[in-house]
Length: 353
Ligand code: UD1
Image (cartoon, rainbow, N blue to C red; front, side, top):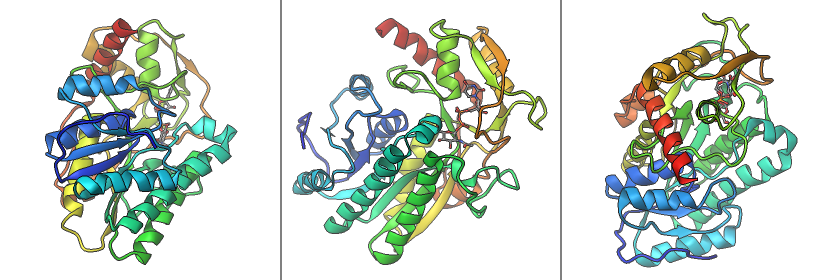
């Protein structure tokens, strides 16, 4: 275990953020600081870039403690907890660290099972050993597959997973809820993300996929910047108004704020375990996203229509009422704002690389 960055002050409300150098993790670190928490990043950069730390430092004007640790390594995690507990209490753990590429998970299922499920088990065991009770888990709407009804709420059943990635999210939710049943101190939120997009308005942090992007927005911004071939729209023969798939896009800042709200909610609970949808509550098709991007940024997106991508669901968007009722949280940013921030991030990125 290597503590990479030392820092001077430590408040008592430490929050361990696994995958804190990743896309959603880094934005959550910013929001945690704003809310008076002390985030501690645990990340081994297997799917993120250390330059994220420079962006965080520019936004926050300070360093964040980082442990360069593999979350499957229980003994190293134990060292992280011991080191934090020497300095104060641990208010909770937010577990982002996971692999998330659907296609890659089909090619390398072992990697996904061992990393995504192994890290969750190791983390829960370490929390239990140290009596840390508040756990916020990064889950995904992928667990619903193509739900019978949209908007989908949290009572919808898990459908058979289309990919090993999706299966690991279902398995982790099961693992966590079994641990919750067995361990009285555990309070949990299972946050089921819809499609996070956007970036910090400063353009200092954003989505930084390593290599070829799999998700729509990073591909779209890189294609628009001329760094990739034109975007391929994966199918226009779906039973949707314009034939392209419908998703619920949510600004990453709104998503990050939901984690702060979840932590604040958890501290008042006595043995809770709740699944919560985090989405804007409305659907946009791929063509609508392209149009919104063009009008928000005054630039045209090069694209072609291609065949369907295997495993894509036709349409899904969230009923996010439960998150509003329980956490008092809802999305504040529009699709256009998110797409403006995504483009701003892409432009700044080019200047830095
Ligand atoms: C899926 C999962 C999500 C998961 C994510 C991880 C569902 C409903 N969502 O997101 O929970 O966290 O994978 O990566 O299962 N598209 C194109 N061209 C592209 C890229 C994407 O047309 O080059 C389209 C897709 O067909 C889809 C939409 O854009 O309709 C969004 O795709 P993407 O960003 O990859 O996210 P999901 O597949 O929805």
